[in-house]
Image 1 (tube, rainbow, N blue to C red):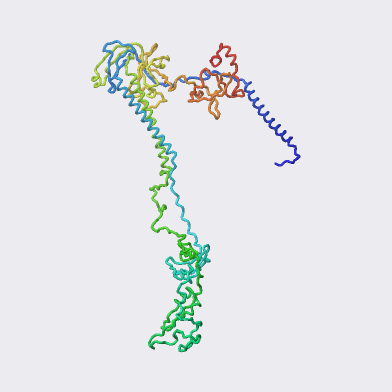
Image 2 (image 1 turned 180 degrees about the horizontal axis):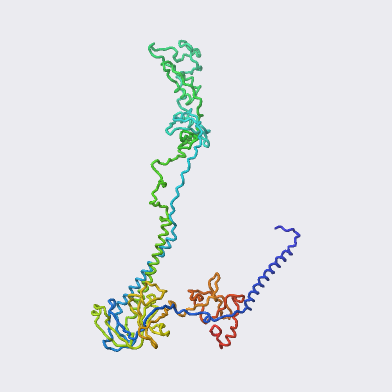
Length: 629
C-alpha cells in the first residue's frame, strides 16, 4: 500500500500496538477467570469403596435329595492306573483320609494331549475367521453387460475420385496435387502393382538422357543449313568445298519389290527438342497398319517438369483418393532417397473375437477378479459363519476336556468323602467284568446332599466350596460343603434344571455334607444354589456408572489427586453387572481413592475436593484417600 508522503505513520503504529495490547489483555483475563473459577470451585467427593461393588460370579441352581446313609463308591477306570491303595477292607476312615493314589504319568500325558487339542481347535477357528474376513472383502463377480448392437450408421457419401489412377507412371503422368517440393510433393494415385518408367525416373532425378544429343557426321565443316535438298540428284551449293553429302532419301535405291524405308531423322533436327522429350518423340513413331510410312503419335498434353523433385505414390481404398490411405511411399530426386510411409496393417481375417452374446451361462469368464456371484458369496459367508459357530463350540469343548484332565491330575490322590468303614475292596479285574465298584466306603453319620451340576461349571465349582440348600417341606435353609465331584458324566440330567445352561450339555454328580441337619429326613428334596467363581479375580472394582463420564479421549473419572483437587483421569472399563456397575480394568483406581460426581457446574478439572482438609485432620495425618498426608 502506498501512503502519501505526509501521512502520519506514527499514529498508525500507535493504533496497531494498542490493538495488540487489548487482545493480549482479553486473553489473559479469560485465562485468569477460568483458572480462578477452577481454583475457587469446590466439589463433593465419595470414596470408591462406597460407590462400587464386587462380583463373585454367577449363581446357578439345581435340585437334589438328602440322604443319611451316604456311600462312597470307586469304580475302575481304564484310563487310570492305580499306583497304591492305602486302606483295606474293614478299615475305619474319616473325611479327608487317603484311600488310593493313581499314577500321574498317564494323567500328565492326557493333560498335554488335551492342551494340544485345544490349540488345534483355536488355530482352526482363527483360520476360519480369516477366511470369513476374506470372503466379506471379496467383490462379487458381475456378469459383463453385452451392449446392444448399435444400428449401422448411414454411410456418408464419398465424393467420386477426380484423380487419374495409374498402373504405370511416366514422365507424362499428372499428379492430382502437390508442387514437387519436399513440403508439398507431387502425389500420384496408383495401384499396388504400379511401376515407374525410366522416363519418369530421369525426370525425378533431373538427369538428361545422353542419347538426346546426336553425333555429327564426319565432315570437315558442318553443313550450316538443316534443310534437305529438294532434288536428290542436285548437289548442294552452300559451300564450294567438296564434301561428302548425305545421299537423298526421297528416291528409293533398292529394288521395286522391297518396301520403302522411312527417312531417318537428320541430326540437324535435334535442336528442336532435347533430352527425354526427344527420346520419347522417337518412341512415338508408329508403323502404318497398311505397311506404309510411319507417322508420329500425338504429343501428350502434360509433361512433368525437369527435376529434381519430390513425388509421393499413394494407394487408397477403392482407388479413391477421398477414402483412407492403404499404403504409400515417397521418393526425393534431390536426395536420391525413398521410403514407405503410413502403411496400414489390416486385421487378419482368421482372428475372431469371442461373441459373448450367446455364451453359455454355466461358463464363468475370467475378469481378473472374483469368480463368485453375489448369491454364491452370500451362501459361502453364511456357511463360513456356521462353521465358525461350530468351531467355537469345539474350542469350548476342548477347553472343557482340558479342564477335566487337569482336575483328574489334581485329584490323582483319592480321599474319603465320608466318615465310615471300608465295606468292600475287590480286585480290578473282577470289578471290571461285573461293572461294580472295587472300593466301597459306607458312612452312617450326618446328612449328605446328592445333586448334579452342569459341565460348564467344572473348574468354577470345586471340592470345599459351600452351597446353600432350602427345603420345601420345613422351609429351612442349610449350608453344605462339597466333598466330591464325579469324574464321569451322568447318564441323564434329571436332577439339573438351571434354565440358563445348555440342556444338551452333560451333567456331573456332586456330593455335599450338611454339618447341621436339624429337621432333615432321609430322601427329602432340596433346592440348591451354587456360587460359580468369576473368571476374573474377586478384587475387581465395579464402579457405579453415574461416576463415569466420557469424551473424545475415552471414559474418565474426576479423581482426587495429591493436591486435594479433582483431575480428569482416564480409565479402561470392562463388562457391566446388575445394569448399573461397570468393571474398572485399569490400575488407575483403587477402593481407597476418592472421586467426584462428574456432572454439574462445579465438576471441573482442578476443582478443590470438599472437606478434604477436615477429613485429613480427623484421620490423624491420613488424608481422605487413605494415604499418608
